Image 1: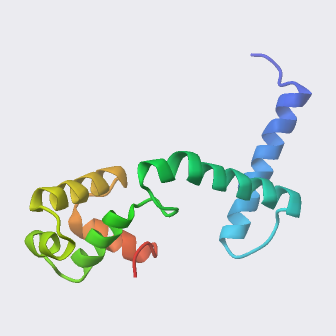
Image 2 (image 1 turned 60 degrees about the horizontal axis):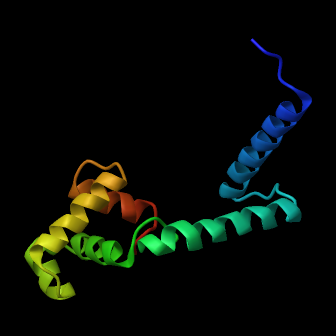
Length: 123
């Protein structure tokens, strides 16, 4: 087993500090320096513009179409009603639901609705 170099040890320590800082900030605290906060925000913006936006995914991981379908599901509408409301085919609505459930690693429609409400992705 090779010994870690000073450079790899420093990189690990920096990564650990960033992860811990993000956790503190997520819990409502503030730990990152303004320099690190700026770097983090630049990375998030780049991720949004280069990865999420070209795929039609919003900053919260779901597209506006997915949010609309999930919101209507949360309101108690069935597939046919959602299709009429959004001017989509029932097949498209079903595909949106299935792909969203799979991508988010959820079990079913009910789990998807509960998840997006709990996480604040829809209101």
